[in-house]
Image 1 (tube, rainbow, N blue to C red):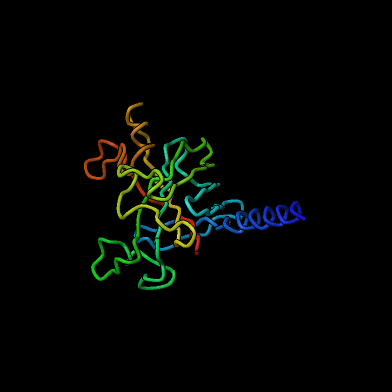
Image 2: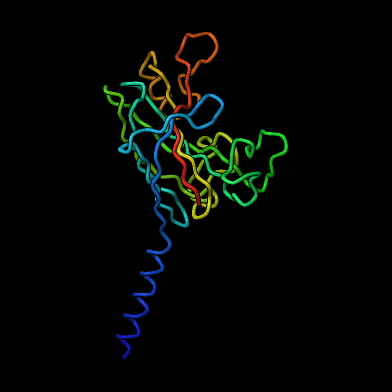
Length: 201
């Protein structure tokens, strides 16, 4: 009888762990300069995220990237989308936009990166932890970091850093939003956010 009870408890606990994970898949879109959605990519281009109570893991397969150049992946999270001005959330909910509701807690977090292939394809994987479990200030461009992994409105944004002029610039490009970027005088490549996938809660 005891073994049956323990087995039942184990099954319940395991079921709870499985249920606590939530996976979703999203197509890839080009991202227009005004942050609106552009061309939908072919079916093979997609991202997948897995949500846990303390983290979000992702895989991202895409094409039509700047070839053989460094890219970063940025997790844009609207931690509490019920407070966004619209559904789904939008740029209007970012902290720097007048009239936003701060309770949405929008944030922009470094989710890793790597080099694209010479044919312009790319395969990226990464993980972002809940803010109290390892997100440092240097990894967050705006907002509090990821604080509500299970229910946040998520975007994965691909950012190109062009072709850095040195190995040091290459390392900088893979670690930060502005790494190896110069958008003013052309001495370095201009960086750009140019692909996006959307994962609604």
